[in-house]
Image (cartoon, rainbow, N blue to C red; front, side, top):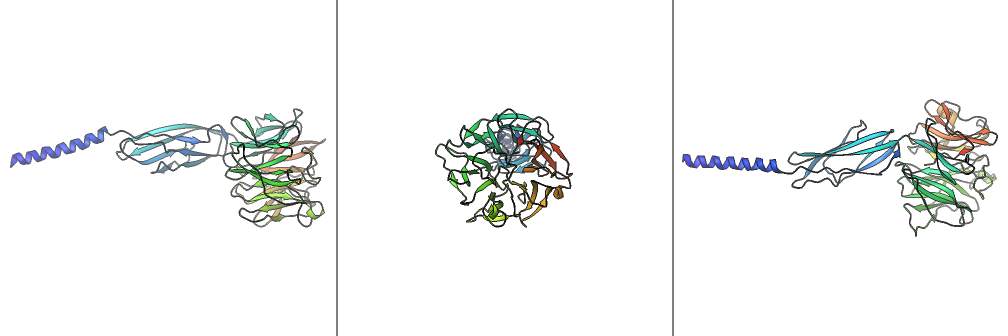
Length: 416
């Protein structure tokens, strides 16, 4: 009996020992962290982290922790097949670290380095005897030229990794897109008509732009990325009136544009803001002050063939999609052209001076606003006299204004 008891105890001990050995000899999981878009982009930049290549050779991953390296709360979960998105809000170099744990309690880590640039305003300048895209930090430093022959820059919403522009091919204006990291320009197509004022759909899957290819300025769209056989589609039919200056909302597919079609001012040679709500069968009039609203500038004449009462100025959405900054010659402004802020829900407009508590609008012309993606500032163009124009920035919290561009004519801060 004692021998049987002893044998049983030995067998039990052996089983426990073998179980412990199996735990001891199991392999650790392997953490693999990938991300997109790769490159150095501007804040705020949304990064998509891919954890799906993480694995466990002889078990399963039961938990993960992803530290973004910027002081924010880490992401945690159990399913590494689900991508994780995170927005870096400020300039810096961040080390993102993924830690995975398997069902045996073993862990592994993998890290990647994310480099984020400071936000910049993109604009056009003719300081080198031809229109050229420049960019400058919001404090007015590190101004640099990018490439020649281009106007109407447009940063892709949210990721801010692609820049669309209108470039001159020697006869007409075409649309091109460049990655902000390497600035290699890819052309949409070559034709005998003009395409200007590109704007990005909120998820970056397509662009809208103004074109005269149908014999009248209308709004057109094209999917992105485009290929050899990509086709463009006409969106608006405002003829015999015109449509210019499209701007997609950053939060949905609503598209605001400027047209001479309508009542009041547009019927007398003016223009008004129109909106095409996503999913709607047709656009509708959004705002009409009775004068020129939206696509109006002091007659720069950069693009041949624009309507006499139309210009390159483009409406600009606030990052939350609730307001639109636009140019108007309303008689109750500071004089000439001024920047106004439209509440989309109520279709009521407020002078930018009243909106920010400062004096960005003056007796000179202010036009072509661009809402900084952080939401707390608007860049715009001001006539500084002598037929010259410069880019300025107004802080919407303090009302303080500072000059960003430094030389020659500088126009068209980046539309997103």
